[in-house]
Amino acid sequence: MAPPATPTTTPEPAPERPANLKALFWAFTWLALQGFGGVLAVVQRELVTRRRWLSNEEFIEDWAVAQILPGPNVVNLSIMIGDRYFGLRGAATAVLGMLAIPTFLVVGLAVVYLHFSSIPQVAGALRGMGAVAAGLVMGAGLRLTGALARHPLGGPLAMAFAVVTFIAMGLLRLPLGWVLLVVGGFACTLTWFRLGLAAASTLHGEPRP
Image (cartoon, rainbow, N blue to C red; front, side, top):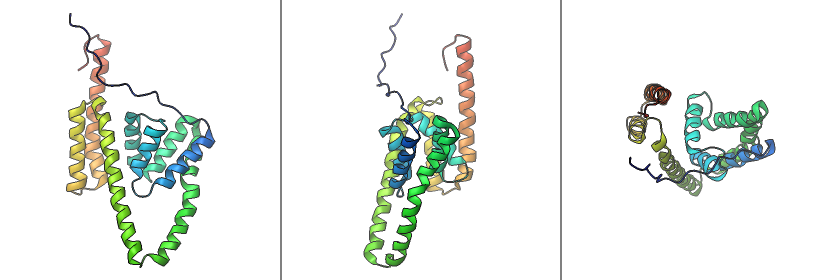
C-alpha cells in the first residue's frame, strides 16, 4: 500500500474577525478612504491579507454575490460582512463606515476639481492615477488566482471560466449582466452538480471525483 501523499502547500492561517462594532466601522472607513479607482485591490488586501477576516475562497464567493446584487459592489460586500459578524447592527455600521467620512471628502474634492480640472498638470496627474488603479486591479486578480486550485471544479476548469470571462468582458466588451448570467450561471450549475457528486461519493464511501 502506497504511503499517503505529503501535502505540498502551506495551510493558510485561521481567519480572524472584527473585535467590535467600532473596529468594524473604522476598518471600512479606512478601506473606503483608500478606494481611489482600484477598489477591488484595496478590499482584497485589507480584508484577506491584512485583517484576515476572510480567506481568499470566502472573498471570491462573497465578491461574486456582491457583484450580482444591485448597488456598488463594495457597499454590498460591507453589508454582508457586517451582518455576518454582528447582524443588522453590523450591516448598518459597516455601511456607515463606508459612506460617512468619504462622502464629505468626495464632495470637497469635487468642488476643488471643478475649479482646477482645466489645468493641464491636474489632468495629467489624474491620468497617471488611473494607470496605477488599473495595475492595482490586475495585481489583485493575480493574487486571487491562487484560490482557484482549491475550487470544487478543479484548477484547470476554474481557470478556463476565468479566461472565458476575461475574453467576454475585456476583448468582446459584452455587457456585464449577460456575462454573469450566462458564464456565471453555467459555472454555478456545474459546481452545484460537482458538489452533489462529491457529497454522494462521500456518503457511499467512494473516492471523490
